[in-house]
Image 1 (cartoon, helix red, strand yellow):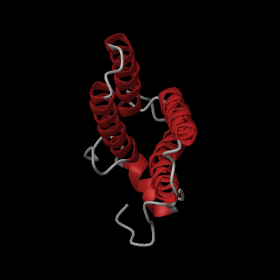
Image 2 (cartoon, rainbow, N blue to C red):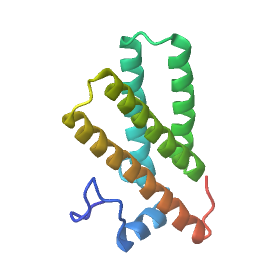
Image 3 (cartoon, one colour):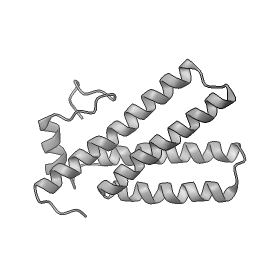
Length: 146
């Protein structure tokens, strides 16, 4: 991640970064590892989504269900479980699509919305995919998970 060539929009991991992420897996701080950054991004997204849901006066049970599922996924993403990273990717994608379709139906979807949602999807899913790649590489080396 120190490499200036890599951007937020890139889903590639160079060999040097891959080796660093795997060899220092337990030493990297939360903001230095891809699983940690994914955790931070998902947590901020959950917080923002919960806040918006409360302002929109959605049913409390729906909000609690979303927070419960989101919190469970975030916990397992942080602990390096690939299934949780894949589930988080699918959950985020479905939520983005549903939100977009609702805005299209309401007539509030604009070019700016499209660009913002597209960039957000690329960044969030990009970090989750990088985290999955690290876990795959770590497992190939025979390192045990938590």
